[in-house]
Amino acid sequence: MAGKLYVVGTPIGNLEDFSPRAERILSEVDFIAAEDTRVTLKLLNRFEIKKELVSYYEHNKDRKEDYIIGRMLSGETCAVVTDAGMPAISDPGENLVRAAYENGIEVESVPGPVAFATALCISGLPTGRFCFEGFLSMNRISRMEHLAQLKDETRTMIFYEAPHKLLKTLDDMSKTFGEDREIAICKELTKVHETVFRFTFDEAIKYFEENQPRGEYVLVVRGKEKAAETYTLDDAVKIAKEYLENGQPPSFAAKNAAAVTGIKKGDIYKELIK
Image (tube, rainbow, N blue to C red; front, side):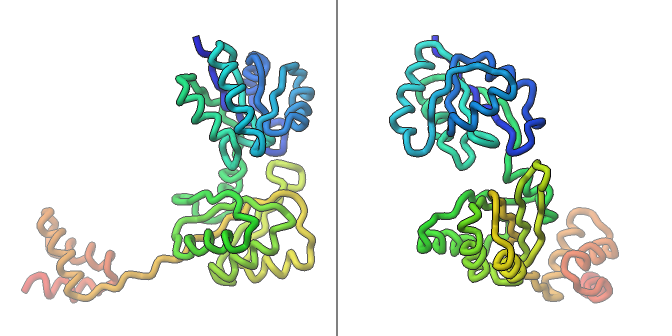
C-alpha cells in the first residue's frame, strides 16, 4: 500500500506560528523533503524533532522526485516543506504534489502561514479580488513582458522580490503601472521588525534609493481603477423598465435606476410614465 505525502506549512518568521499539528506530523513521518535541509534542521532542532531530511529544491527536483515518489510507493510517509510558508507556492513542492497524484499517492494538507496572504491582509489595499504573481524574471525582457500583461489588471497584484532586485523592479513597475499607482511594500513579516511601507511608486523609488533594501519583500500593488461607466437617459429608462417588469412601482424603479446610472430620478420618472 502506498504511503502519503503531507504538505506542511512552516513559519515565515516567528516560530510561535508553528502549529502543534505540523510539529506532530513532522515527528511522525518517515522522512522530510526539504527545500534547504540546513534551514529545516534548525526548525527541527528548535522543536526537538529528529528525522531524516532529503534535499528537494529547484535544481535537483528532477533527480530527487523519482526517489521520493518511489519511497512513498513502497509505503513510507513523507512531509514536504519549504524554507518558510507553504510548499508549492513559488516552490518546487508543486511538482512533487502533482507527481504524487499521478502515482496514486494520497496528499494531505497541514496548512501554515503564507507570506503573500499575510502581506495582502495588512497592506491596506483591496482584498476582495487579487492575483499572486510570485517572483518576476531576472531577465529584464521577460520581466517587462510579464508586467505588460498586467498593465490593465484591476485586481490587487502581489509579488515576491529579493533586496538586490527591488529597485529595478520598482522602476519597471513604475514605467508600466504609472508612478502614482499605490503600492504596499512588506518586509520582515511576523518578525520583530515587521514593516509595511505604503507608497506611490515614485515615493518608493526615492525611499529605497536613500535606504538600502534588506531582507525579503512582498509587494502588494493596487489594481488599475475601472473607468466610470457613462449612462444616457435612455439607458437609465431601460434599466428602470427592467425594475418595473420585476414588480417595482415607477417611483422605486426610477430611484433604483438613478442609483445605478447617476441620472436624476425625476428625469427617469418623467420618461417612464409617458
